[in-house]
Length: 355
Image (cartoon, rainbow, N blue to C red; front, side, top):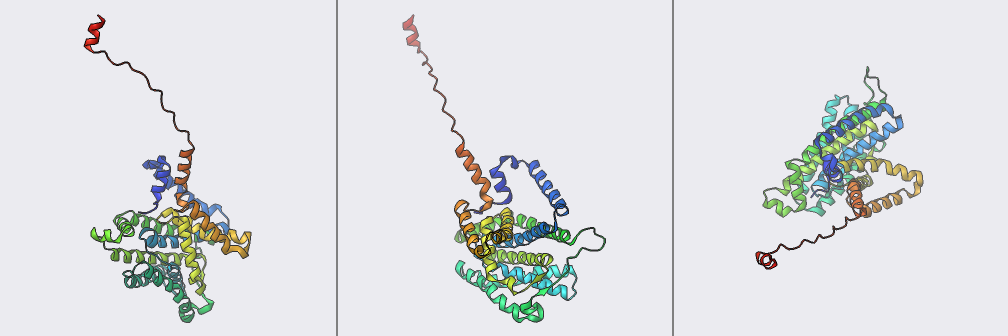
């Protein structure tokens, strides 16, 4: 079963949010805040939020294949990097930006489909080995294909400047692009995992044998989940170029893929909100550990991961439920009411004897 979804975690923790008008009001309020926020924050804050949005989308793709379907994938960073390279190459060749976006989504999805078709029948550990190979092969491949990728020096693409006539700064415009494209991606993914495909993913994750007996093909849905995750990875790669505007073989490094996996676990597997929290972890925690001690960055990040796993095994998204349980335990148990003695009703014989 999936750990949490967006509405389940909130409504379970706070019954007040189960009311439809309250949820609609919250959604409207969030949209208004996100629309105004880029105008109120400084450049550094806007850039940080934009980067969080980029990696939240990347974690979302990983969540589709691991959190909802139960497949082990250690190569999600490859699809982010692939999408970034496609974006940079298309911009450098003067392609229409819509065509660039479609190519950045479709090409990683096609590669993911080919990989899934070959690996989905192999089983959990074999799929993990195949996905590990993606970033390991991607780095030297990016260095060799210098005509397309810029080689070891990388490639830059500046295409996200503010269009003429729009009174915004570049950092504001970039954040709006991330919010728009990322928001659409999250809404579409949420609808997917809450529909029939999401139920099929959950059955496959729980037990493949049971799924097969119910007419749900584990192979088909594994391939579908991996392809969707690859497509979402391409979207995050496009957004990466919107914000960072530069990519190199370092983007594909296997270590980033492990950090994405840790971000998904800390945020919450099988959760839409958990993907956003995972994106925040990916961006903010390294900054925090670097401030504390740059030489202990890896050690501190590992310690944070262990603490979260011990305290919140289902990730930060489960915090409201844990808090609610603690509050319930702290409440005093109501005392049992004193029994009231009621005399038994007299039988007709006893009434005659009294007379």
